[in-house]
Length: 499
Image (cartoon, rainbow, N blue to C red):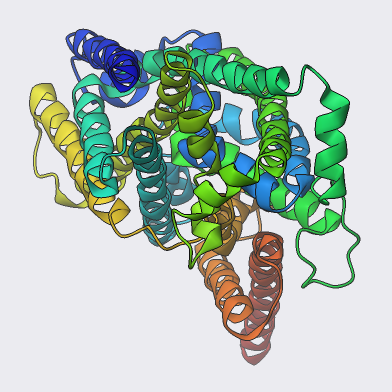
């Protein structure tokens, strides 16, 4: 009976989401409507959509699990979000909006060359495929733990459901469902925090004392060297670069704020998302402390949690929030929390599928394969099929992600390895006029090579990868441009002397 109530709550939220997607899909006339919602969305809806997209199921499950196993060093990452968002809001965001583009990589072709555009967008596609498959896996993991259904079945259901309503609904459906899902996520988080406080009779100090005794309230670690795990400088500098990419070089986020009706709307949506994301991440982090304190006082619960994977405690602890929901939160309320976490995963996945479709349609299909003029209806159908294709690919990939370890850490590693050179390209294009297409390609290749070197031959902590590769990309491109200019000048001088 109890399981039936939770299932009913989840099904109701899913049905409402799907119905909204179908309803809004009727108003689509062309790919501009499908990818950019006609560029008439209110800034506040876009702002909440960005938050829902950024706070994925990985964050919702992964941040509490990280704090539960380690400490609050991840909290410092949230402080860089506001700084990075302000930088993007007054540099790249207005530029993208005024260019009236769908894929942000169109800018790289106009500024540099088609080769820079294709390579950079391809890197994003590869990175996002991995990230989206992890998002689907996180939703499946929760459903499996909550309803005692095989993980494989839950992953397939989560992936296919999100794929179908995204393919039909387009960007407008994505944004409005994200708004609903944001409030579902918020309510779920409030319920979980309230339950923990109830068990401790509202004594926040006791929760903090228990977590502190276990070493889980540490926020700052001194930096002995670049190998130090989550040192303060690695977090502040590395996370700043990662957040620059998230808000300025990530098609998933940028495509959302391009749906507003003006440049001012774009800037306001970004700032609103940053202001609300900060407290959201703080609360999720504090939830991790509460979970540690609760499990510390209930050793039988810890034993039950570890029984999910006796040989791999890290894998088992990825389930800690889901395990808490199943075993502690009352029926009905637990259904609400589950709906919130599933909503977090869906909001990120639907954004990703639509954005991958936009990249492939704009950067590849229209650029290389489209022959002659096509009707708007034909183009719209192609865009929907691309969303369907990417959703299916990510769902299949998610079936193979059950041995990756701590979810949040793996997601951050994937970003750190690849995004430094990409965001560097955008800032070079905007601020360093001397860099041409050849210099940009040289810089990008050397930046990616630096990432490979760091992974293969060093123990440098992964948070340093993005800033190192960001710096190498810019330095190499500038150096190449200067050397090229010197060589050309000498060649011209020698040629004129001979004449």
